[in-house]
Image 1 (cartoon, rainbow, N blue to C red):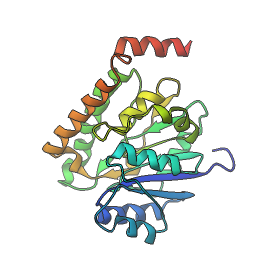
Image 2 (image 1 turned 60 degrees about the vertical axis):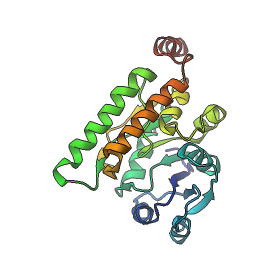
Image 3 (image 1 turned 135 degrees about the vertical axis):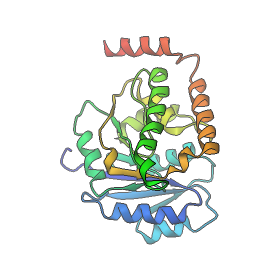
Image 4 (image 1 turned 90 degrees about the horizontal axis):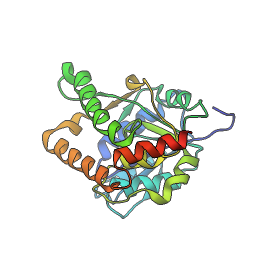
Length: 244
């Protein structure tokens, strides 16, 4: 990265003190440490904020419920030139920050995202189940967007790109913030999927039937929130015009 670039890691949390402690411990072991870690306390009733402070993270309080509002507050508060995002139950490998920065070394790329493997659940199924989940998400999102989606458990982008779309993102708690951000960034910014799944482990609770059904419903709601302006043929044509 350009000399002097700074890195902020943003983590939204609500009542996840135990996994957050493990996540922060993994971030402390990074070969390229973050310049700051911003934990957004989304009105937790447990000691998530205290856990974050004890680990040296900066805590930002967000009283508006929902991940979209929480991450927006974190991105706004971040001071880094580059913003990395993961979840409280994510466990990044020591090379995660460095790998994401390498991916953003291309000045033509404004945002990157990568897959992961599960760190819990049946051992034999952790890798294939994660790939199936993320493959389904990409297969669903790519045609709607006309380009690569973003996945909130493992993504990074330039702060200037966030500032360019900040006023257009949805803060509805029933919207997927990562898919919504991909809609807005994808208009004029390049998003790239990188092969870095080995650098991130996440919880398999995402694929539990009830939670997966809710996630899918929110995904459909996020797509419809952008219609009719972003009905795929119109969006694809508009993006093609921007490229020219």
